Amino acid sequence: MDIVNLNEVQLLDFLKCPIIYDSVNNKKMLIHKNNIALNNLLNRVSNNFYLNLINGKVLSLDTIKNKWDNLCLNYNLSSQQCLEGVSLLIKLFRWASNERLIIADINSPYEYSIKDNNYLINFKGEISTIAINSNNVPYLLVTDFNNKNPKQTLLDIKIKYTLDCFAYWKITNQKLKIRVHHIKTNKDYFTDRNDIDFNRLEKTIKNVVFSIKNNIYYPRESVLCPSCEFVNFCRAWY
Image (cartoon, rainbow, N blue to C red; front, side):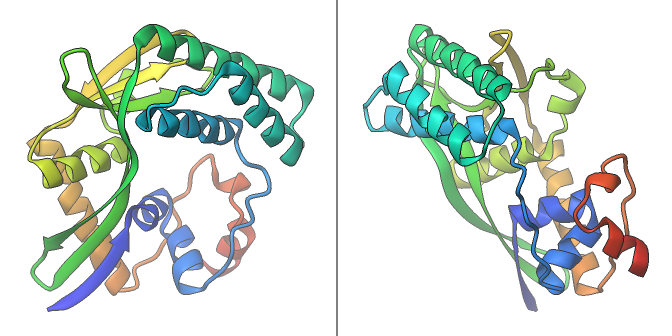
């Protein structure tokens, strides 16, 4: 039985577009991420804030602002982006304080195996953020810095949430509820994952591995294609 190693970044790349996976993992083409999304930078600050909460330390608002100012300088953000970011981080700080937020773990690595007919798949990833509610029950916390409100239909199928919940279930035999906190509006959205979702995820992983082992790569055209770093390569060769 062949052993196949796959991680969640590779899986998500393949699902986004198999050409991205092929270009990065097989052809070893580099992605130059010069323009990092504002949300990703805000998540860096929030993750640092959460990490300190795990260690029993609450960062001051001034410390959070200083961390954000440094990112603004390092990434040459516009004054509007910097102001927008600091406003959202202030809201995050106030919400966490009022909530008396308890963080149990963040970016916790995991690994599990899935058996297929022809392959043993070793799958690796990281569980994002595990928080504890007032009843001492753990849940998956998603901090959403987007301007637009989350759509419930998308929350119910987002594969990253399924990956995190499935990994947690594999480790603890417990199923997590998912709480998405939208910072801008200070609203919560909830979803969960069940056995049907977990079975679908396993089938997805198996199908992706089958495609990889059989060199089945094809463009998955979408509205995002024009902004893809591999668009010219893709159009020339596929």
